[in-house]
Each structure stands twice: as C-alpha cells, then as structure tokens.
Image (cartoon, rainbow, N blue to C red):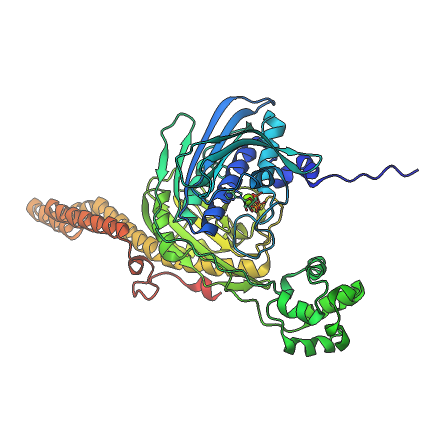
Length: 564
Ligand SMILES: Nc1ncnc2c1ncn2[C@@H]1O[C@H](COP(=O)(O)OP(=O)(O)OP(=O)(O)O)[C@@H](O)[C@H]1O
Ligand SMILES: [Mg+2]
C-alpha cells in the first residue's frame, strides 16, 4: 500500500529549509537577520517618502545553545511609517505575507519570506521569537510584543503585549536573539555589509553599535528622497508559462483581449493580428479567460513568445546616479581618487535593468599590492556577500583586461591593489540563482552590459592611474641617472684628465638637471603640497566635471577594450 500523503504548511517547509533563505551557517545567520530587517526598514521608508534613519545594535550576549555558536543579539530600529498592531503577527510570524509580492518595483523585498525566516531562526535556536516595538503616527502609544511563528499553521502568535511610551512619531524596532557567529570584516563581514549599504543608499543615516564599541554614525550625504518609479505591467517575454497561467486566473471573467491588453505591457490590438497568424483563433479574444482550456492558453502563450513585441519600458528602473555615488563613496574611507559610472537603463533578457559602477583607491586600505581588490556587489541596493563565484558581476570583472586601465591583474582574475570596485544592478526583475538572493544569474546579455559599465569606469580611472604611473617612471629614471651619472663623470675625468673643479661643476650641473638641488626640491615640495590641498578641497566640494568628464582632453587611457 502506498504510504499516506501529507501536506505541510509554508512555515513548516521553511523551518526545515532555512538554509535556502540565508541561514546555512552562524555567520550567515547574523548577516541575514540584519539584512532582512534593514531591507524592510529601507523599503518602508522609501515607500512612505521618509528619509531613513536606522539604528543598529549587534552584540555577543553569551555562549550559544549549539556547538561553535554564540548567542547574538541584533536590534534594528527605523523611523519609517510603522506597522499597526494587527499587522505585526502577519509580518513577523507568517510566511508569504507581503505588500511587495509581484508588484514589479525595484524594492529590496519581494517575497514575504525574509523577516519571518529571521523569527523562525531565533525561535528554533534560542526559543524566543522577534521582539517588536511599533508605532504609526495615528497611535498614541507604541505597541510592544514578542511574535512567534506557529509552524504548523503558518500564522504569527503574539505574546507579552503591552503599550509603551516611545520617543518617536513612528517607526519599527525589531530585536532577535539567536545562535550565530559574528564576523566583522571580509566578504561576509558585518562592517562590509554596513559600509556597502551606506554606499548605495546615499540618503541613509546609519548608526551602529557593535559589542561594547562606541556607536558609529554614517551621516547621509544626500537629502534627496529616493523616488521609486512606478511599476509597469509585466512584459510577456519576461514570463514563464506557469506565471502566465497564474496571471490569467486573476482575470477569470474578463475576455482574453482585455487580459492581454491590460495585464501586459507592449501588447495592443495590432499584436492580435500577429497572434492569429501564430495559431490563436480570432474567436478566443472575445471569450472569458476562465473558459479557455489550458491547451488554448498554452497556444496563446507560445504565440506571444513568437510575436515581435516592443522591448519593455525602462521607466520602472531606478538608478542611484553618479552624483550621489560620488558623494557616497567617501564614506568607505580616505579616497585618493575615484571614478563612477551610471549607465542608462537598458533591456537585458527582455527585462529592464540599470548598471552602475564605482571604483575608488583607498588611502587607508588594508590591501597589499597583490591582494585582490575589494569587490562590493549589489542587487537592488542590497549587498551580496556570498557565493560570488557564479555571479554575473564577478564573471564580468574577470573577463576584462584591467591592465589596460593601469591596474595589476593576474591572468583572467580579479585585479589587485588598494581599490574598491562596487557594482550595482537594479531591476524590478533581477534573476537570482537562489532563493536567498545572493548571486545574480550570469546571462550573456547582462554580462555584456556589466562589461560595458566596468570598462567605461575603467577608462575614467585610467586617467589618474596612468598619470601617476608616468610620474613614478620618471622618478625611477632620475634616480638611476643620479646613481650612475657621477660614476660616469669620474670615469670621463680619468680618461680626459679634467681637473677636479671641472668634474664637481659637471656633477652639480647634472643634479640641477635632475631637480636634485635643495632649493628646487623645496619649490617642488611646496608646489606638490599645494596641489594636494587643492585636490582634497575638490573632493570635499565634489564637482562631477572635475572627476568624470569624459570630454576631458586629458584622456590618456587605452580604450582598446571598449571597442573590442
Ligand atoms: N520596518 C517595517 N516597517 C514597515 N513595514 C514593514 C517593516 N518590516 C516589514 N514590513 C512589512 O511587512 C511585509 C513583510 O516583510 P518580509 O520581510 O517578510 O517580506 P518582504 O520584505 O515583502 O519580502 P522578502 O521576503 O523578499 O524580504 C513587507 O512587505 C512590509 O509590508
Ligand atoms: Mg523583507
């Protein structure tokens, strides 16, 4: 007899598969919890038109309940619109409860899984759910509680409710205590995440306190609210058959014609005559979607894929912008010079996408000359910190000849030196390789677009690097002449029998030519420090044209890679 078939709730599925949504190790558990809470805070602020101010506390509290784990506390507080008390159990304790699902906007959250997974992890490792405080502008007092996920039923259970006074108009604070491991630096580091988040969110004011360290504030560098473009209807070429059929169920009684015209972008009456040539019967257009058989719907889907449609609009894509990135990049540390590049939104794999690149050389970088550059990857303004090997961004970087832009690079690998290369991909439809959204699928079209952005940023950078390298080469030549010139003069003197005074004069003349006499050296030093001050001043009052003017005559980069 076949064994009994049972079904499980969504919460049951995720509680057994938390590794799929970012909880596969202690280090990842800390980063994922932090990231899910911060993502939600930023999304909520942007949706409500509020400049985000986020406060983060992370500390090791005690030894963990599990081997090789510590008990970690993560608390994230925002100044967003807040949640009503009724919404709290749905948000923190129920999977697939979301205000963002399938809405086709460039928000960080998409699925309605993130924060419930963080609650579940806390619950299974420390027997406590999420501790939440929330207040909307309408509420007189804030609502405080602990939320757990009822794993069997996929519903949130609220415990220890109280009303408290809270010194803010609105916002949400959520605290999780769970088993994890804290890593500060490196690819999977908390500081890497925080700095990365501040780079791509110039409008964010971030304060963080880690263990007993003093709190650190990264002030916002832009007062401008991010305008999230409105979503557009899905383009048929971005859909799979299953999604198309599911989309159709929303239009049940409407006719096929209405479904196609209002449910999709770039489909109109003119498309219908193409569809009829591709197997769709004319009569179907007047029939309700629900009366069409699955085979007929499959024919419609197939014809739509074949039909020539205008490419999707790029209107729904958000860009950070070169100006904002240029200001933000200085929050990464002391920057010697930098180059930023914001490509116009374009279409890759039938989906609108915007690619932006920032490259900076850091004065206080911990990188040695042979260490790989620090790579920061972003998808919809969220740092990606794991599984970079298969990511479209890394693949594109490795495929470029960085030597032509003045950087060192081991063969077909990531370049080296005290640089940061930050690459941001923004799209309402990013194709990730996994549910935990850590790696962007490396399609040929996206890699080509990324390469273009990287190469253009590389050209801009090359101006600085090449100039500096030429100065260094010149100095090396001078040092060489300085060392061997006097030996040569002595030798010639011996052969010609010239008097000592003549030889001393010749040596003095040589030093003058090389710029090695004291007065000249002092002059040069004064000139150099004045130049440096000027440069720092320029960095402080950033003017795009000073750094990124492609029209600049002083373009001595090798552009061969772009034409390739
Ligand atoms: N700090 C917050 N302020 C206001 N609303 C919030 C906040 N956190 C979560 N929400 C609401 O709760 C919903 C669920 O959050 P959750 O993180 O589970 O899913 P999501 O962000 O929609 O998608 P994803 O699973 O990709 O993170 C959000 O869609 C949002 O409406
Ligand atoms: Mg979320």
